[in-house]
Length: 541
Image 1 (cartoon, one colour):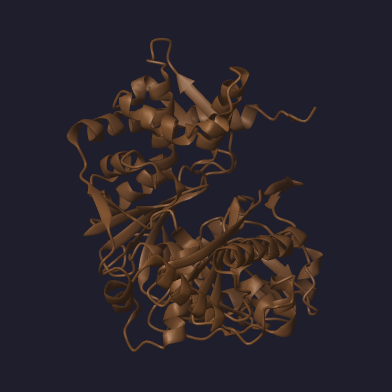
Image 2 (cartoon, one colour; image 1 turned 90 degrees about the vertical axis):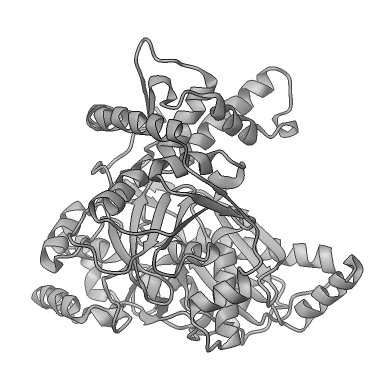
């Protein structure tokens, strides 16, 4: 079929609403992806945003959330109009995904009772520790239940009025459909899941309800948490008010069916076809996390490892690092400013690719350089705040190549610590690891380092940079088609059967170099801890 015929066919798909839409609220971008029934991307839109630190809390304002949703959809809508000369009036199915964890507390009339606390906050240490002891199950600091319990420990006055406590993707789905639901993968970052029932673990719910009863709030845990759905379920339909919120032009019609909202970890698994046992993926962006679908429970409780689920409810071990590529982006901006100082326009150069490729000429151990790109607390290394920090010895080999190599190694370092626990201590078996996210956009760089970090072949698919919003669109497509196939079968046979990808094997020299870097990294953690304790500058003064 020639290009003109394909365009005509795609236009008809959009006009008839035979497509599927995924929208994901990432840390730095809100992205929208429209696909056909084969999973092929028809159009994309995006909106850039940044979190802010307000009174010690990492947050996005509720107005920013609404405006960002509308801006991302508007970008998609304009892309469709420009490419196909058609106005979007209906969509076959859609779904919302977002950064997991954190908490949005709402009152009886849907009014926010406090700021949206994102996954990046680490003010929940006491709550997380107490709940881990109570449940005999690791509760990370960023989980919703840790935030809720910390509110209780802090005697927050608004808790008597609490009616709904949820995550960002669930919140936006509620605003668009009126339904208080979430997908099981996202729910597994709210509260522990019983994988037999694919619902909140009732024994643990009962234990937490006993704590609530002592406070006398007048509600129980299930009263305020979203109802859990699994991949393939319908989570509601777009209501009139939701359509008006989404599309400022008023052309979008209500009634669109919604897939269960999912966290970015779940959509990343879908986007990399890593939802079957012994498969895994590593997402590298503002945060970096590894997901491995396990065959059996872990032998021990590890504070460095989350136990979550896939979007269809299978058990998954997660090594999550709060900090990822933020410091790489900061160094990129420095070099862009240097380019401008030379009288050159940085837009004429792919600086990110140039810098990443330069790292390949670095020493395998980064020449004695160590970087902590900690902009926030890092749970894996048990540090509740962050200070970006470079450490080197007088005789370190301080070159551009080593600078960038250390940046990329560091973006994967905390995740490597968790993966070492899974692979070395727990003997978890992995057949396939797939990398995705912006860090893997430069061919053969981060992929090479990751393969060495985990001593496992790493595959990067041709869709690696599509990421979570594409994964959410696939979940919407899966729901729309009412498949009798399981989610793994749907992905294997209908989406990924002909997908192109490249696999990199770990090489001995880089493995040995990375291990030396990690020895330096772990030895220097004490310096990072002291920096957090001693350095409290207000850089605005």
